[in-house]
Amino acid sequence: MLPYERWLLIVQTAWRSDRQPAPFATGSYQIGITATGADGTLRIVTAVYKPHGPQCAERAEQEAANGTVTYTTVTDTTVEGSYDLEFRSGRVQGSFTAPMCLLCAPRPTSPSCLD
Image 1 (cartoon, rainbow, N blue to C red):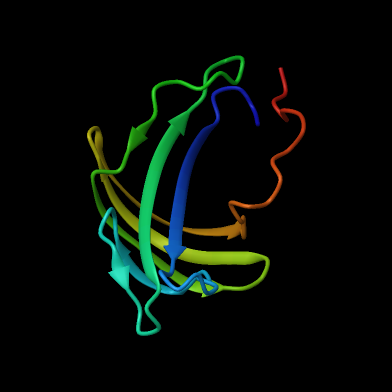
Image 2 (cartoon, rainbow, N blue to C red; image 1 turned 180 degrees about the horizontal axis):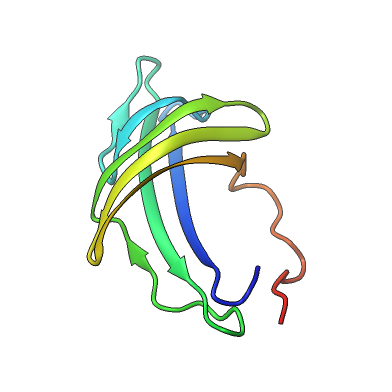
């Protein structure tokens, strides 16, 4: 992380009532609206804007109030897609290619911020 870095965190949470695996899936998802897949998997997507200050300290974050996230490609290592999101301060649109991150994966043991 670098001083004044800005992050847009997009998260897809998936679960199944029968406790079977709930894999990450492609598709378009409305922010904050639970969608049920054909296999019974429930999914919800959230997005948070997180600005950081001069010493990498987090500043007030904003959660997207509305919008859509579309996942076009999902592999074991990469997620690609686009977003059209509304925040209190405005609307943002764009595309992304990001590493696949699993919530159950261990967190880094030390911060990576450079002073």
